[in-house]
Length: 151
Image (cartoon, rainbow, N blue to C red):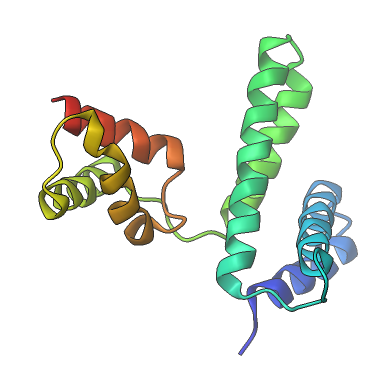
């Protein structure tokens, strides 16, 4: 079975052969982040696909944040490149939850925890995070939880 990391390596080779500079640069940086994570700490270890997905999610978030910063500073070309890189990496992540699917998961978590009011937010977040697992950004999840607990 091919790991997600191996898929990234294979796609990098394909991108280099195709002279796709944007894709190859993006995959190189991501593989570098994965390699850094593998060697961090006392021992070298292979990351699981879930851990690799978390790194890719973090890299996508970095690109989106950078795109917003560049757009705010009037640097449209740089913002476009960051968005394009985020789009490439998003292809390696599971499909994102729709707003309706996210709302349903949060509703179930609120009912399951019996939370009411903002004091229960931590419990609801703890219950919903494993179900969401990389299919929605934390900010989106938190916003939906706040909306339902305040509502």
